[in-house]
Length: 81
Image 1 (cartoon, rainbow, N blue to C red):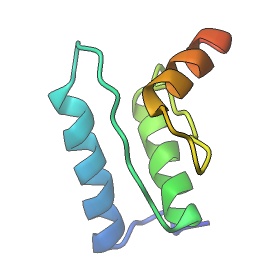
Image 2: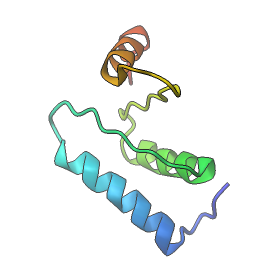
Image 3: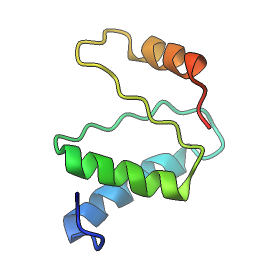
């Protein structure tokens, strides 16, 4: 688990994802983020979900050919908050 006080790098990564989400505010957006650090990924998701409880996070399995279709089916089967 990452520290409660984020490093400059962690804060920068979170800020980048926040900007990506802010651009699509009020519109549908399929935003993708790749993170090679599971701990950082989980920390960013935790922070974003605190700020936006309706945020929908879908983990796309490796090898998925049609990402849009996978996300669409996943969110229909289990609607986001």
